[in-house]
Every structure is written in C-alpha cells, then in structure tokens.
Length: 251
Image (cartoon, rainbow, N blue to C red):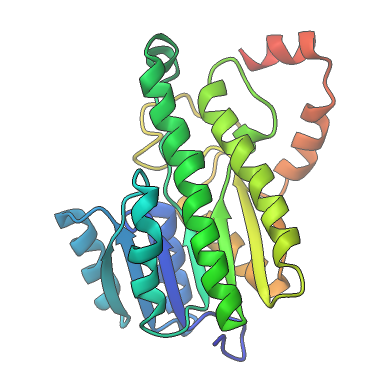
C-alpha cells in the first residue's frame, strides 16, 4: 500500500533498464519505496540496474519480460503480482527507431509499432487487471508529446505513441471507480542514451525531471502530465496550427 506521503511501497518497472524508469525508482526509494521489480530482457545491464537500487536501500528483483512477446506477458507479470500487492506499475519501455531507415524498411517500422504500441497495450491490460483485482494501485505509462501531432521527421514513432496515448485515456476511463489510477506521462525531448546524437528540441528535459513530475502527479492523482509542464500550453497551440504552417515548422 502507499504510505502516508502517497509514495508506493512496491514498484514494478516495465523496461527495467530505462533511464527514466530508474530515475523514478531512485526518487521513490528516497520517499519510502522499499521493493522494486525491474522487468526486461535478462542481461548484465538489467542485473546492474537492480544492484544500483539495492545499494541505496531497496529490495530489488529482476523479472524476465519481453515487450515483443505479448503471449508471455500474463504469465511473466502474473508471477510478480503473485509475490504480493504492487502499488505502482511504471511502463517505461519503448524504442525511438530511425525514421529514414524505417520508411525504407517496413518491418523496421513494424518493430517500432510492436514495441511501443502492441507490447505496451498487452502489458498495460495485464497489469491493469491485476491492479483491479487487488483493488488499488497506479499504472503510469510513458507516452510522448510526439504523439500529439505527427511530424514529418518522426511520424512512425509519433504515431505509435499517439495510439498508446489514446489507449491510456480509454483505459483510465475503464478503470474509473475501481481503485486503479492510470496516469499518462507526455515528456518532450528527454536527454537519454536513446536520444544521444539526435537534434535536441526546445524545452528538452532530463530523466530526473520526469521522475520528479511523476512523483508529483502520483500525489495529485493526475490523469495526464506534461514534462516540462509548459509543454501543455505549447502543445495546445501546436494542435491548432493550420497544417501547411505546421508542416513548415515541423520539418
């Protein structure tokens, strides 16, 4: 259960090597989160991530999980929930892809869609059902402002996040009144390994800043948060730009 400060005592991170996921875990551990499950493909990096959390006082476990294998999600994640109640699930996996290559190689584009949308939908439904069965908990899903309006330079990635974002809004409505809180996180450009070497957009942020925003969103039981918060106003304007103007600005 959550403590008096609203911090989850148990956390499951889907995408256990995600820099945003680990930054969030570290922040919540300072707020009394004690048990963390890091789910991802077995690797030395996943084990090192768990060890880094143990070093700051958490009981950390690794869980074999593959976003590209939805058929295994119910069993793999069911084992985690069988260990006891999970107060928060953070869905933090995803791939950025390479727009130029993905346009030329349809199967590469399909891979982006399968990870970012299909895998996320499957894992979210499995976790939401488990949270609903236990009667409480938060499901926090990392979306992106890229999903709010497709740009020429990243429309394959953006479209996968647009689908995920719409799914999360519907899932939040489906979970209303069940005791399960669903929160969608829409960061802008985040400085991580995944975005290294990419052209940095205005209002760029960091994994630690996203983690701080997630913690605040949990306390407020927000449905959707933007990181940084000013993106909410910016994207409101962007959504209403005439398409010819948006096309020129977004190239």
